[in-house]
Amino acid sequence: MKLISIVVPCYNEQEVLPMFYEEIQKIMKQMQDEHPELLFELVFIDDGSRDKTLEILREMSLKDRRVRYISFSRNFGKEAGMYAGLENAKGDFVVVMDADLQHPPAFLPRMYNYVKDGEFDCATTRRVSRKGESKIRSAFARLFYKIMNKISQTEIVDGAQDFRFMSRQMVDAILDMHEYNRFSKGIFSWVGFKTQYIEYENVERPVGTSSWSFWGLFRYSLEGIFAFSTAPLAVAAILGILSCIIAVILFVFWIVQAVGDNIQAGQTGLMCALFFLGGLQLFCTGILGQYLAKTYLESKHRPVYLMRENEEIYRKNHNQDQKNPESA
Image (cartoon, rainbow, N blue to C red; front, side, top):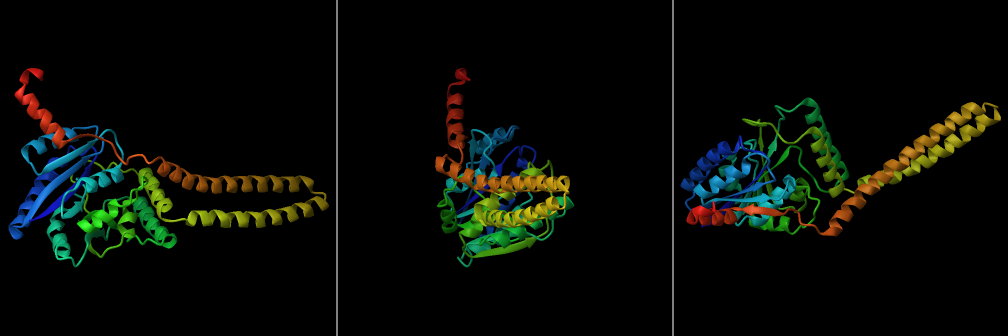
């Protein structure tokens, strides 16, 4: 028998969770009909949701023993959710996918066929269009991939998704990377292994809206750059050299101005030079500060997430309440 663990990070997904569960049940049954050796478990990660996501997961875990969940003590972010799911998945194969149905469950049989015989270690999807996204957001996304692949030795395929069907060997390699500041798109690429990409058109959410804002995605892209490239440090050094050259040129220009008795104009140029150099120094210091901050956070060795509840704790308490109704 082969166990497939389906990891699903969730944050305020009460509207779409029942739809996802219904759809994934159909796919699991279809795959078991074609491959009787398959078993499934669903590992939901409640990332500190503020709606009824946790209540829905509790009910699902009581009705379906295949449903497992971990509820965080607060919102730790999707990266922590994926890490927790991979860490707690028991399967011979592990799937990571979103609950919003933008990662179509219908792809799972095809992905399994790529991975089952060991020809590939991972099957993943790649969006070839960004239908439904704003033009500005799409443009910045494409720009990020171009910049990232220019400055980093880790290649990240444009449009590649977190929707992945992975072998146990690849999952264990990912879990060996214990870093606190995680950027999974880069980690998936960095660990290597043979990957098959499946192209598809973008799928919009059936209900609700994404919790990712433009600025949230922008900060996330910076995390990726600082996590998988030291190029910004080189940029800071180059800017420092250029600023020195510009300062020498401006100093010569100021001397010429002063000789020509145009002292006021020379003072204006000097002030501009001071502001320019000051801003450049702050910018370079900011780059260094980002790397120093990442190092500082890593040195603390804080856990990536903290669990508040899981299905075993809830089932145990639920059974106790049923045995002792007076305590409810």
